[in-house]
Image (cartoon, rainbow, N blue to C red):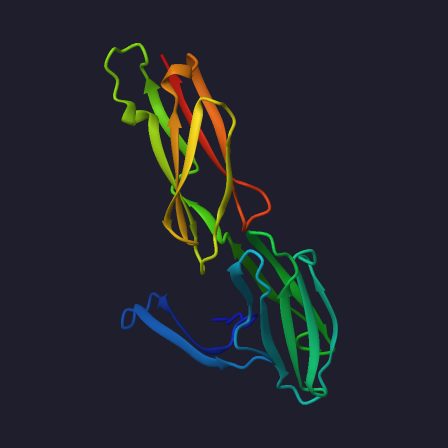
Amino acid sequence: MKVKTANRSGKYKNSAVVYSNDPQNPKQRISISCIVKPYIIVKPTKYIRLIGYEGDKLSNEVTITSVEEHPFEITNITTDNGSNIEYELRTIQEGRKYSLEVKNRTSEEGFYKGKIVLETNSLNKPKFFLPVLVKLNKEVVIMGPPTRSYGTILTSRKVYNEKRLKQTVLVQKLRGDGLTIKEVKSSKDWILTEAETIKEGKQYAIIITLDKDKLPKGKFKEQIDIFTNYKKGPLVVNVEGEVR
């Protein structure tokens, strides 16, 4: 049995079943156990995670320690995600221990993955990498689906349930308060909108009503832009359906 020790540390245990033509012992289980000691220890984790909200300035720091006898140096650092992260290496103990601080460079909402590659003077570990994950969540969101369907609207009926022409969209700030709705714009004049406060600075209802007398026949897919004080661009809600 062989043990691949790359990117592994700590206790390891495995076993296998051996079959033979020995009538006394046709089947035997053999096992192996060992402790894999790394040449370089990265703490508290072997990866970098930066998770927060858009606009946040985040940082994460790991310590890198060599357990080899000869002096240890980190000779070069590169990343494939330089547009979204930045890093700084500091010496804690010359030739033995270093700290690496990673910060997000971008502040835009999104999910960014990559890695930091570290080159060293170690003969046993000349190169290793740290996975990096940056996740910046939206601070102000539309609760529920971004597209609202009105289905088929039969305006020719004498009696029509006009409640079907009205839908409500909730806009919410996920962290803290201070949210205000600055403006709501619809792409057509037969889409009427009204903002109502549910919880001041935290949650608002945008009531969308279709004007039955102005609805054009046929299928439609239109857009409503909701402008707040917490986002450069608008929050977008699509409305769709068919008028017969």
